[in-house]
Image (cartoon, rainbow over all chains, first blue to last red):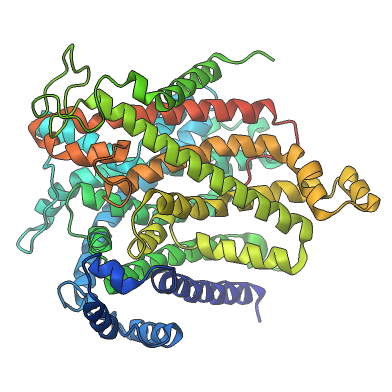
Length: 318
Length: 271
């Protein structure tokens, strides 16, 4: 077999294994930890009978291992159970929420990725001079403020002081694409700001690493302009690390979305999760945790696969 | 070696925040949960930062909030460093299946985003300070584990460690007397970054309502309490941003300086 295919297959198998292990961890996190689930849900006023009833309703009287496999088997078939608080089917609710979240994350990525790469290139071109310093200073500032505060700062100035954008991202069925984009403009802006810093720093580091190679010196000695050296010689060789950076930051975006959705009251998966953690609605929390972990692991897997495929030494083995 | 200006400023501001946290009871102008005025009063001579959503003095809330936030972040950082570095060093020194088991477990923990994992755990555990510190500390210990294992792996191949082994020293001696002193500077620099991460983490949890519970003040909670004012143009919710950002940048400046100063030594900022 071609060694590349073997590597890719092994990496995919590892990803699946990791996801399985993560599902065990999520299940254990809610089930096996000290602290009784039923009394956590009902709080202090619970009597013995109500506790026993709830345990039975949750199926807590059966062994954890059995319940885990039932849960996993259901999840594999798209059945995530029903919510404890409103008795609705979780998978159906989650599907709508997820498309909203993906809509938000998609636009944030579409803006952030090209911007981060271009700014990273600019920082390398003017390394140690003022554009570089300005960019790294701004990055340091943006990663020193938590996402939710960045959200409120943006809302305070752009939505309230200057009245440019709506401060709350409400979504409903009758909106066309333009209305929707207008509604999510602020959350997208904040998400872009939160990932831009990391992505740019890592892009800069990846390209700087390539810039130290001997062939870059050759290109410089040939008399190529600095931008030509970067664009023609450094960038193609930095594709693998840069793609890796992009994927890792998209994974990071998935987490940032949770907080930003709460700030802008956006009906996505993050808010769904946070609401139901407070209500101690376990099936929902487990389902959301599993989906978030799957997306995160999937993006990391994709990052690894792309850097394997982008490596010419692996593509053309001797 | 002289201290660069940026590091001096960073050190000064960091010290200021810690002192304010320690002596909060003496410098706070009013009581922590004391209602002293109208809702969202603007800045004035009596209330330097104005008042909050139910008429408490915002400066007082910020000082007590800093105390809670810094206390939790410090405790969490210490916990993550003690657990992470001891396990990391053990993995590096012991090698073999111990190393494999610990490293694979850490890989697994890191495959789920910390915030998501913390939310999952907090959905069943009671939300109290010790639990929050434990959850944050153990989740963050995974990163310290990776760094300290990488640094220790570089050190274990040194001649003096080999000499100690041949002398017949035990594993404890090798970890605490040979590796720890040489691994200290990259770890201390990393400690600054982890501390900031903890401040951001606890603020985020409190903002989501799953961290510090009212009436206790903390920086994330202050944002949550005052966020409705934003729509009316009341900037009270933005005050913690200034505190968090200046603290984060100051600690970063100090950490960068420590790292640069010791860059010639072994180790570095691992993954």
